[in-house]
View (cartoon, rainbow, N blue to C red):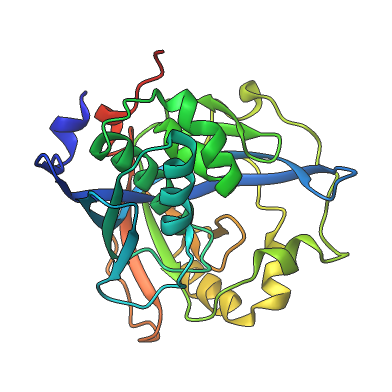
Length: 294
């Protein structure tokens, strides 16, 4: 099925791209298998795209200026959107710039990949707007410079990830719905990975190990440390358990999720939590812009 059949196509003119979507992700499991000599961690994870989106608009600039407009919350001045734009600008040696407006909906410090997804959608959109026509394999090294999750969003497919997250095997996953809960408190990824209690020796898995039960396999090795650092996450997990569901943390948290087998009437939850029922996506909304060809 084409991306056009699933998502509204971004509005394109010669000088603008509007309604460019950047989806969130969930880690269905996340195992830490080793720590490398350079301090990075070897991991295995299964990523799925979900329909929780940031929305970006791009306007061409005939000068090299990169400008960002924050529509609903204030982002850091040099966030991944700006970094991605400048990195592609430098790598391509284009004389163009852009004004980028962002409606930020994906929670920050949630383990849902919002910043990485914004960076990937920025690379894909500016590749179009600036007329570069690079295949995605030419964008992937730039994405990896920006963060380990960015190549996943550039690939545009659900995937089994290995290495530090950059070794990706596309996967076809059964459609599913998830209850996703983000408590107010966030988590610092660096604190989790540096914690001496983090398990770093989980046995290496193969695709055959989880292929028959992708939504029930494994765990998130970061979760015990995250629960220690963020007690509010425990409340969110207890709330999900009270619904008869099995919660799991995504990424480095603090968002937690559970697969839904049937619709539920959700009880009252703290007002400062962000709660959304999400569907998995088969492909990235910008899949029409993703080409692996030379």
